[in-house]
Length: 281
Image (cartoon, rainbow, N blue to C red; front, side, top):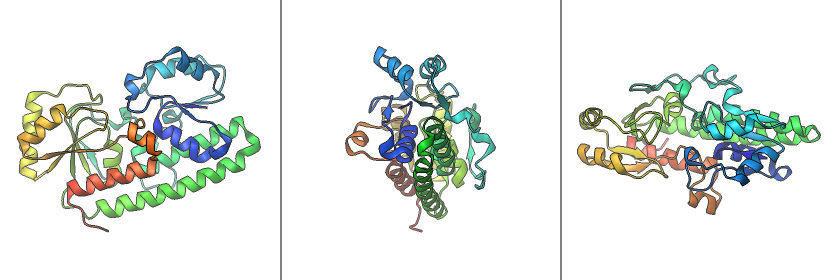
């Protein structure tokens, strides 16, 4: 089977264990938006027993090829609609996302909220069971194990981020709105949905002033992004630059060490805790 992005591949590996061979379509260190659909990648998409893709235009080339397939495809963020919440879960409507064009309906990064990652896991288990019903119980057990881990991770995030002196994060682009929404943070971004979008100079000046007035100590950039404007803003505001990972794709180091969703999220929590002045729960 083929997975378009890192979180889908991680879910499939955990749910399917030795029963599935998972190919993560992206290359380590290459952002999904920059993924070139080579002949080999197109063939992999067309020939796979199952394709797991994000949907919502996140990887339009992948979606276009996936729609040409005769075999099963799951566009995970269309099933279910994340705006409707996760059954049995706190809706998490405590945080805010500020700035123009900040609607969460257009932000695909729902996997940064562990409770929404549960919905992805359920979809992956259902997709695998639909093409291999003889192992439905095995996929169910794999999904339950991963969901248990996700709920512990959610508890760790909630307890840690409830102890912080500050609750505003400044990020390079609007990738962390779902995380902010879940845990009562305010996300301010240099740019919009795309990390390539150039911020307006007036917006940068306003952000720097707000950072100074609110004592915000950190500008977050991403593993695959150059420091660039984030570094300029940090210097203007007397702050530092740190890294938050949107978990779109494995970085080279993650690929080499097989770092999984949980360990990358825990590294994100450590970065947030340091930036926001959190106390150990």
